[in-house]
Length: 273
Ligand code: KIV
Image 1 (tube, helix red, strand yellow):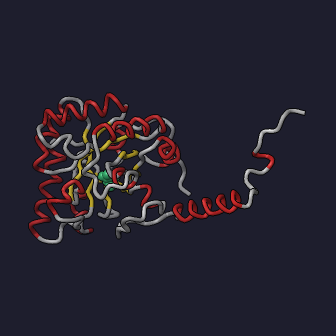
Image 2: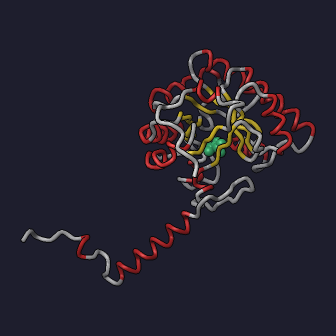
Image 3: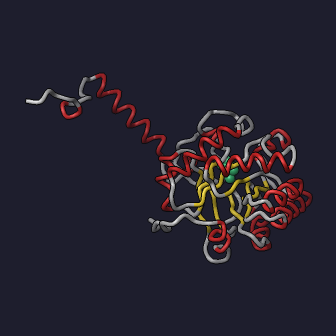
């Protein structure tokens, strides 16, 4: 088991300084108790809009609202003390204009206490990222497979499979870094392309379905714990089968309730003698 990382909350500068030193560790968290479990082991916690699918049962991330992200972001900040916390900007909260993006991000930062926001998009979002970072909002970019474009791409398709796609991801990665993002998530991209992007990028590249040569890795926690079975993407390694364990615990409880062996005497309150 790897040793816990440290006790003081990480900063953006700490994350940037890890590029070329050691891989950056990140997992998603949506709730205070999960943040508490993960906090000693990660460099940053990502409050991903994947919570729409994982917690709320939506088919995509698109219905997730700014208020929902703020509620979960604040819970994760309360539950953690060492990791940097990054909160996803949900669909519709930043694409309209750079001013709209700044206002939404300002609400996230002010109302959650998180240190940074993440938004999806490459060249087309560069102007927005520059506007936000110049005004004090640290931004983590997200390029490659961008789930909020599910309806444009017609599904969750691995990127970098042809020359046009490779050129587009390269341009997106360069634009996001040049605009001032302190790093970017690179999702669902062919491994050699991802490796090349990480080698060229001046900022940390956090892979998911990308390459072990990225500057760090992120996974959806419920995926890697075996608690979310709607999708079984190739990039997920299951480090535990908590869904199975939860089922076993619920079955044991149900058996004991029906047999009246729970609650036992030690779980009841008796009058004082
Ligand atoms: O929403 C999310 O959890 C994400 C990660 C998959 C990178 O964006």
